[in-house]
Image (tube, rainbow, N blue to C red; front, side, top):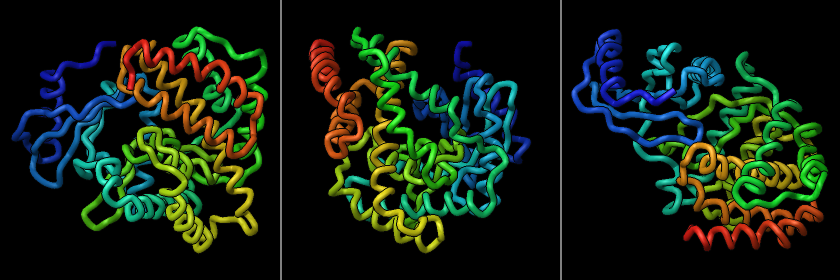
Length: 340
């Protein structure tokens, strides 16, 4: 269905606010559309500030968002409480935790804010350990198969008109998915990066976009942040963040004894699995949704994928095919399209 018009959304807000004893005093300001299809609008209506969030009513993660918000607030996590919602239209009013994202401030103080993001992650993981949320699913075979099915049809075949050799991706993913089968498990946010974290005035970090949370590998959110698809962080940048995270995880009892070496492998496995998924999603946003916003990030994500494969030797056949076939085709496509 078509996205609701701004007048329709404004009318809904004006009907909803009196239920909270509020009244709007400024126009709705669109904050942009997420990869998920959710959209946010800021407006003035007294304090504390509120946001309008809209999502397609058929979005299967909507109940999960509501449940996890309630759970997180009860656990003292810094995430937006939902003040009012309408499941029929997929609209809700929730706390506005700030205009800036961590991506906006990280460039100036990467070590400080990177460590603050790890503190927030540790609080999230500990809350999941102490009081597991009922809403969270597992990172099961169906989810892994879904994520593994994005790279070939959207990036390879859809965007670049090539196909990997039969079985290549499946064999490689079997290796990269090992932490999902065997590694230590925590509550995984699933999209922990600078655009989904909000710096707070007290130096802490608030959490948004948590509706897909599920039980999965301890290393997943760590590498999601360090290998942020929208940021150029290198191991030089994130080494202090990893040290800070490990110290905190050990202190909280989240880090298994003797896990250091395996964590490094799990970190790369999760990062490489996620990079393949992300490349498929970014291509799909363009081909299916006509949204070119993520095309500039295809080459940086590809470069990090190759770097990770070279560093670890985890999937040499995949590495060889990417370098020989996909990489040249991706660069030729980007040049022809004038992509950065």
